[in-house]
Length: 467
Image 1 (cartoon, one colour):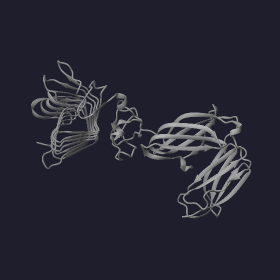
Image 2 (spheres, one colour):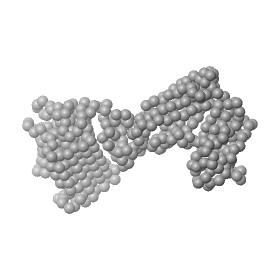
Image 3 (cartoon, rainbow, N blue to C red):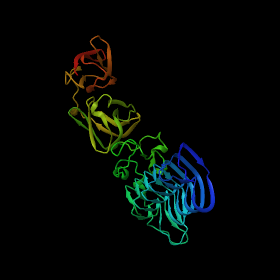
Image 4 (cartoon, rainbow, N blue to C red):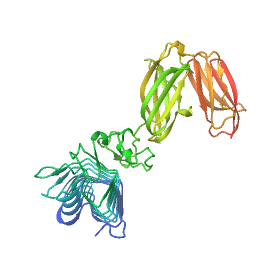
C-alpha cells in the first residue's frame, strides 16, 4: 500500500534503520510513496546510519519509489544496497514526483540504475537544489547506467542546481571515468549542475559541468561558479531571496550546503574587496576602495591609529556618513572614498576598513599606512563650524568644522526649545577639518540648532529641515 499522506519530521532524525530482505519492489523507510491524484509529501526528516539491503527494485534510504509526490528538506546517511533503481535517498523518482532541497551521503551499491541521490529520475520527475556525496558501486558486469548523482535520467525529467562529489566503481573490472553526475540520459533536461572532477576521479559526466575541488569550495564571490549559474545563496538577492544555499563556515568540507541544515550560520559570501588605497591630497588623506561584490553589507567603518601604537580610533562610519553605506547584496562592482582631514605633518598613520553585515558583525580588511608630509597638511586657522550645505535641506545636510588643536569634541543637535535632539559626534579628535552628514529620522520639519564644542570653545549654527 502506498503512503498517501503528509509526513513532517519537524527536523527530527530516525537513526539506525536496518533492512535486509529479498523481494520484488520497494525497500526503504517508506517503500512506496504516492498514487495518482493523492499528492503525498515527506519533509523535514533525516534518516541516519541506515543499513538497507533489498535484493529488489526501487531501494533507497528514505523512499523506495516516489511518484506524484514531494520530498523536501530531507537527507540520508549510511549505506544502501539493491538490484535496480537504487539511490542513497530515493530508489526511483517517477511520474511528476519532486525532490527538492535534500541530500544524501550514503554509499550506494547496485546492479543497474544506481545513483548517489536517486537511482532513476523518470516521466517528468524533478530534482532541484540537491546534492550527493557518497560513492556508487556497480555489482553487475555490463550495465552502464550509474552516476555520482543519478543513474538514469529520462523521459522529460529535469535536474536543476544540483551537485555531486562521489565516484563510481565497477566491481571486478576497470573503473569508469565518465560517470561524474548522471550515468545515462534519454530525453532528460539538465541546468546549472556541477560535479567535482578531482574528488570523484571522473573526468567527464552527463548533465553537469566538472569543476575542481577549489572551484566547488570557493566561498568568495570572485569567479563563484554557483552565483554565475543562478544559485540562490543566503544573503544575496541577485539570484533570489529564498536563502536556499550557504557555503563556508567550516561546514560540509567547504562544499555548498542547504541553508536549513545550519540556519543560524551567517551568509559567508563576504564583501569582496578588490582594492584599498591611501594617498595625501589637498591637505588630508584620501582613502579609496572598491568592491567586486557585497553580501548583506550595511556599510563601512574606518579606523586609524598612529603607526604601531595599538590605539585604533574610529574616524568615520556608515551611520554618520551616507557615502559609507553599503549596497546590501549585489554582484556588481562599487567604488567608495573618504577624506581624513585630521592629520598632522610628519606622522605615519595606519588605516583599516571594516564592513558590517545585517547581524552587526564587523569584518576587518587589511591595514594600509601612509606618511603625511608637512607640505600635504593644512591645519585650520580658525575654530568653528563651516557653512552647512545645503541649507534649508532635505533629506540630509553636510556639517563640517575645523579644529586648530586636538581635544574632546562634540557635535550636537538641539530644537528651538533647547532640548537635545541628537548627539552626532562625541570623541577626542586631532587638529584638522571634519565633515559629517546628518539625516534626521522621525523628526518634524523646522529650525534646529547645531552646537559644536571642543575644549572651552563653542560654535552654533541654525539649519532648516524642510519636507
